[in-house]
Length: 329
Image (tube, rainbow, N blue to C red):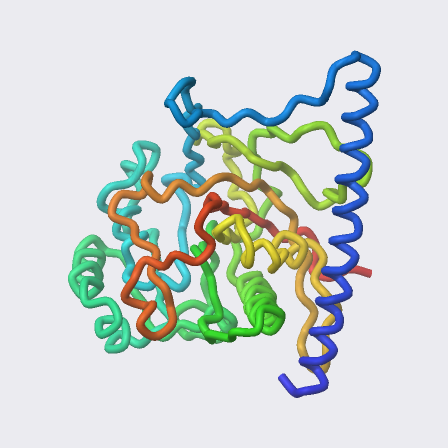
């Protein structure tokens, strides 16, 4: 991408982010005003949120219900696997809903070459051997932004394309440039992944969506904070494939505005083709502990050998998208 194209994209992303923040402030102000109005009518002050468990341990925290976004019949493509521990958990110790998932339906990929991967993550060599024993296809040197060009991937379609904790890994200190770098990565990935998604009707997810409030912009949203979808609730026809992106739900990752990038991507610049417009199928908490043995590995230099601490204090959250339309008019 040339300098002029990069500048145009940066301007488009900044403009988009500015509009989003403005609308977010308006929505928040409307919610606060509505809360105050209701409190005034009832004669009570607005209640402050109460923690699920206090310091003395009084009260009980409500356990989070795990959402399993896969079915045993799904074909799954994992992107940027690092040490392949998520793939290992999916095959060797999955949640009970996936006990009969056939490993041959799983393709796990890494950005690094096989040699680089084993050097960065020594444990990965044994993990890869165990995966291949079960029939999992493991592919190295896969660029998430050029999936449709890879010889082993380009003529196939998947029900689920999964990227847990994507990151450009460039170590850029300047926050604005870092955000832009990762937004471009996400946009390029979403554009590339669209070529490999299964065709079919829009997937079904149980709706737990709250009543729409004034200022909400979820025309391209099917469900928010969905619960587990059981196999018998799926239609017999093959549903449209989905993309799942998991990130820490705190800054700086929330500043990437991934749902907005997916639903309303900026216009293309230069020779870059337009991005498809995705719909949000659902979003849900990603519980690392539910995937036994899974370890999130960092991507840059010495950080690659650690579990990473960036973005502590929030939850991990998965966003699931399906294609809404190829481009907007």
